[in-house]
Amino acid sequence: MASALINVPARAKRGEIIEIKTLISHAMETGYRRTQLGALIPRDIIRLFVCTYNGTEVFRAELHPAIAANPFIAFSTVATESGTLTFHWTGDNGFSMTESAAIVVG
Amino acid sequence: MNRRTSRREFLRTAGVGAAGLGLASVIAVEPARATPMAMQEAIRKMVGPARVDPGRVKLELPPLVENGNTVPLAVSVESPMTAADHVKALHLFTEKNPQPDVASFRFGPRAGRASVATRIRLADTQTVVAICELSDGSFWSASASVVVTLAACLEDA
Image (cartoon, rainbow over all chains, first blue to last red; front, side, top):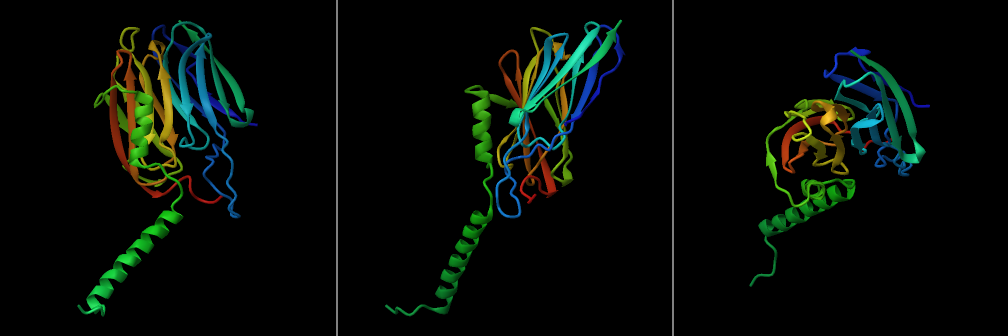
């Protein structure tokens, strides 16, 4: 099972721009590699990453095989209100993973 | 006319033949790769008929990487990120990876700052291009060349 690491500041001032770092374990098999017998290894990647802040989408990333294994994505958002940040990764072969982090804004 | 091939002519013909053979074998061995032209096409597809001007985008990549399997990349655009004036998207492309698309990042005013960091794969020494799309419909680009010692993507499992 994939595991994800998320780094969100626990508290922030209202209107402050916070940086969010996410890392998820995933091989990101490109679909261009071959086994030693010459058989093509089928593609298995994470194609989409979405971050929502209390239900509102704030950031989205569409990924292709050129993203390194164990995708690391760092981005920013404005701390508008206390609540939950939800992170959702979806990919090939029905891959789906959701994580969330709480933030206190004051 | 003397039909006998002179030594010089023979060498020239042989040389051309060998060069041709060499080229053919390179093509045969080389796996399917995107070319700078394929990258231009991919950019066209993303951008549409709009004009892409150089500038405004800051693309940070190490000039020399040992391992193309994980290349740290940071891309950002100076923007107030308000509802009226913000960066809508940032797209990354490569010249010589098997496919030119790398990633597309989509922002809104809620992002606060148009900046992303990630790690990419590079199959060869090449140029990486970042294109940003602003809310006013204009497109801006930046590029960076990277020398790769160990290529990604193409090794055996």
